[in-house]
Every structure is written in structure tokens, then in C-alpha cells.
Image (cartoon, rainbow, N blue to C red; front, side, top):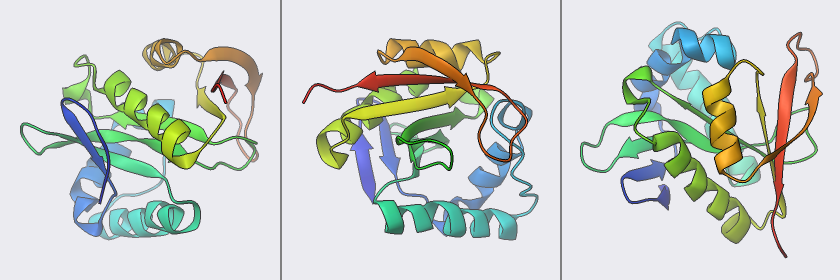
Length: 171
């Protein structure tokens, strides 16, 4: 199911057939360094992760991370979407892309589409994002979305300090 469309991208729900893409992304060193090691090491694990994490989130919340597909090629480039996380009072926007697609503006283009969806469709009045402080490119995307640094935090059960950015939407 298509959720968001932009000039160059289509964001749609993850399906089990996205397991090879998900396996590649989750084992990308930059993903492990900047987000987390999800421990997914094979296609069956990737299918379970899609089903238990993201398909379950769609059913429970009506949103989750969506696969970002290039319109022109139909290639899966990354993920972008809305996440309900333990330890955060607000819905979080998250994104991650395969390095082959960095530098093309896909993060900001997809994040702008997701931000509009969060405001206009989901009805959020506030959106937050978290990042490791060293992930300067990701923080630049958040700032370009109009988000502002609020504080440093640590999510429950984690050992890494994160920065929390937020934006309020006009009612």
C-alpha cells in the first residue's frame, strides 16, 4: 500500500518480499553504528522483523517505517516513517538509507512527505526525532525539517546518549 508520494519517491508499507532489502540495510555498518544492531542475519530473520516490528506497527498504530522506492527505477533505497518508541512521549520520525543512495536528497524529500503525512493524515501536533550526536548528516536533515534541539536523552535499556529534536505543528 502506498502511503506517501513525492516527486521522485514512493513510500509504501513493507511486505515480506522486502526481506532481501531489509537484510542488507539492517547489516549496513552505518545502520548498526547510527541506529542499532537488530541482530537480523538471514532472510527468515528479515521476514520476521518486517512482520513482528513494522507490519505489527501498521496494524496497531496505523503507521511505521515505510520502504522508500525510487519512482524511476522501482528500487528500494531506504526507510522513512513514523515510530512509536518506548521512552518517548511523542511519535518519532525515523529514516535510514543504503549508502548507494546517500547524497541524492532522498532523506529530506521522504522526511518532508512523512512530516506532512504526520500532520495532515495522522493528525499529530508535535513530531520528534532522535539521533546519535555524531550523525551530523541526519541532524542536518532534522534541522531542514524545521526541528530544533530540545535535549539529550537515553532510551530505556540503552547505553547510548541521543539528541532529541522536535517540531510543533500549528493547529
